[in-house]
Image (cartoon, rainbow, N blue to C red; front, side, top):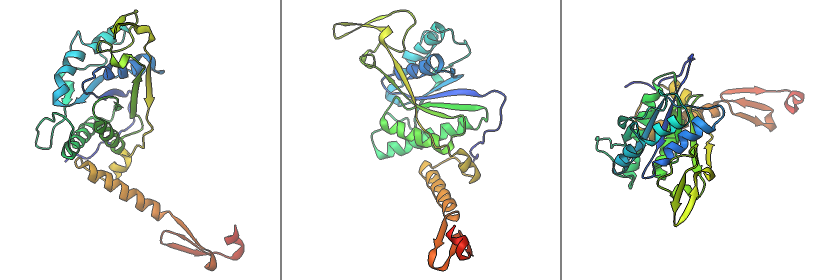
Length: 271
């Protein structure tokens, strides 16, 4: 098995967006809008990868992919580079079980384990390129998928990798035709009301991330069991903390650091 790749200095990073999505594909374009249009400095992903379930796959492809899909419309409307935000139907990835069976949904503990392994394997594969920077969104899909993506990214993350959640104000999250704030005014209808697209607001929240990719690399951890990898890193960090723990034995004026003991004179011990 290949080991987790380690990022080295690169002349130019390659931003790759990894988004979770279910039956609300707009979370993908909302994330891309926030990164590539609204954010300062702009982050324009070179490639967009969408992780989903079998049941939601076709809806995502029909809504987002292709020359008339919402992703290309967003890029064209805001003058983003034509070679950016590439998302073909093959970039919509259905999570699979360890036996290769597509997951229709994430409903059981077994589904969760399988989904976690699939997500971790994908991130490991992407991180094998030292120039890639991952920009991951947990806004869509099942909550379990978001938790698994956050964990998997944390265990392989490097300095440039980021984790996000995206929110859109009411009532736009309930409007099926809404994918991102358009440049030109656009009117939607919901519950008999006219909704002006100019009132849409996208809020991109960057989630704090403990980046443990270097720790995983130093331990020589291979791709595979997500839970086992998390446990191995936890044990290694705990051992490191214990080795550097300072213990004071006041009655004997002893200072202990790991296996090292030093008895100090009264004045030095008081300091």
